[in-house]
Structure formats: structure tokens, C-alpha cells
Image 1 (tube, one colour):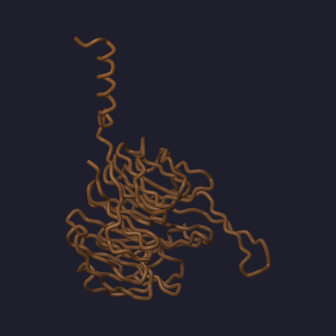
Image 2: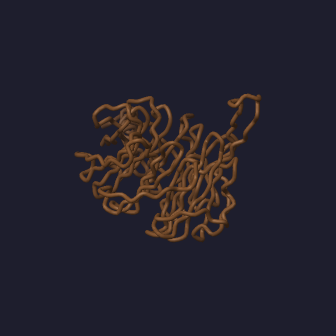
Image 3: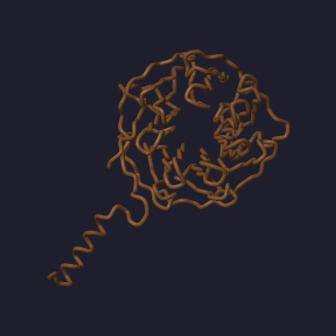
Length: 348
């Protein structure tokens, strides 16, 4: 017969051993380097459930894997350019943005990067994000975190031509757009922020740029009209990325470790306690519960409960991590500065 003290100890042991009950078990793991060491900074990652993975960065090359990262081939897009942004409609159709000497060139592919057709974009601001509502209708945003200059561009022919829509006023000096995402046939969200410029002297380099509160912009009519949503970020928090799973559930991240989640399409947002202060640069949500965030100082986080709690993931680096993409909860990739190329290793 167990004494009350022994029974209490057994109950305590069971509670400690229980995997985050009640609710789903917390997802655990780490990021580990897996490709030969390089000093080439990487900026974009995209992973598909079927095993296709794309990575892009400096020196104008696109790395592609068809077997979940076991083997890779490199497609030369433009050797003198930086590839910062990618958008893939499916595993074979996509757009890779090359920036060289202050100019943006969009490289369109329909065969997974075997061949490309080039389209020049008429703007000097760097392209920050691309999103497509369907195979023909897409939106592109540009923005500078220094000057705040940014603009919208729209395509109705799959990316072959782009124009600035006159109906969109959010594209004037002092406002930067850093990311855009699309859901379904009509729903769009974009994030960015204001930048106030102060003249502090007469020299050519005497401008002081002060970042102001970031904004969430939303359209439910394919981009014809837009409204502003308040994510609950402080006045000095810039928003850097946005991800929506469907018309209701979405996440945003930004500077100072900021993250927020919505379950009503952005009408209301709940600020999340990430436990970090580093700028978060990218978010990839797999479900209403599971989302990964990456950012400065080698920061990588995961939530398994819709943002109620976050777990910090080891990355083995202090470099900035620029992007993250998961095919599913077990297979994900992250890339960043100083040749940072990481693969997620799950702890069971």
C-alpha cells in the first residue's frame, strides 16, 4: 500500500513527464548547418511538400533540390546580382527577383529554373515581396527601411508586365512596404511602416532616418481598395513579414521581437510574448497552432499552441537569419547572412 507521500511523488512525476498536457505536444528541434561552408549570404527559401526546395542569395544563383535537400543543383540566374525575393505559384512556376546596380530584374520560370525569361521593373527601390492570387494576378511591393520610399506594382498576365495601380495611394515617400501575402482569389495583406527623415546637417550624408510604427494593410477585393489594420505594435516597431493560412488566421512579425496573431482576418490582433528582443525577419505558419519565426542574432522560434508560448531553437549561429520555409513539421530550411544555410532537425 502506497503512503500519501509516495502517491503524491508519483503524481508529481507523471505531471512532469507529461508532454505539455493538455493539448498537442510541443514541437521541439533545432536548426543545423548541412551544406558545405560558404561566406555567401542567402536571402530566400521555399520548401514544398513533394520534396522540392529552392534557396537564393548573393552571386545570382538559385539552388534547387528535388529530394528534400539530399542533393542539389545550381541554376545561374544573373551572376552580378543579389537574389533577395522569390515567389512560387507551384513547384515549377515562379519568379526570382535579381537586384544589381540599383535595378530590379524579374526572372520568370515555368520549368523549375531550367530556363528563365527576364522582365525589367521600372523602379529603383528594392523589391521586398511578391504574392499571387492566381496564375495571372499578382502584386509586388518595394520598400527601403532607410528612406521609407516604396510602391505597389500589379500584374494581370502572370508577371510578364507590371504597372503601378492608380487606385492605391500607399506608395509615397516615407512609407515602406516590406512583405505581401495572398489568400484565395481576393484577399491580400501587406506590411511595412513609416520612416521620418530628419536633416541634421548640411553635408551630403547628414540625414537621420527614424523608423515609425509599422502598419498592416488589407484588401478583400483583389487590391482595388485597401484598409489599415492595427497589429498592436508599439510606435517604434517596424513590421517585416506577414503570413496568412486562410481568410481568418494570420501572423505578423517585426522589430524588437514583435509578433502578433489574428483569427478574424486582421480586424483584431493579439500581441504574442516571443521572449526575444531581436528583430524578427520572417514567419512561416503551418497551421493555426504551429508557426516558425527567424531573425537577427541567429534567432529561431517555434510555437505549437497558436502563439501562447514560444520555444527558442538552437541555430549554431549569431548571423542574421533572413527567411524560413517548411514543407511540413519535420522538414524545414532557413537561410541568412555569412553563408547561413540550415535544415530543421526534429527532436522526438
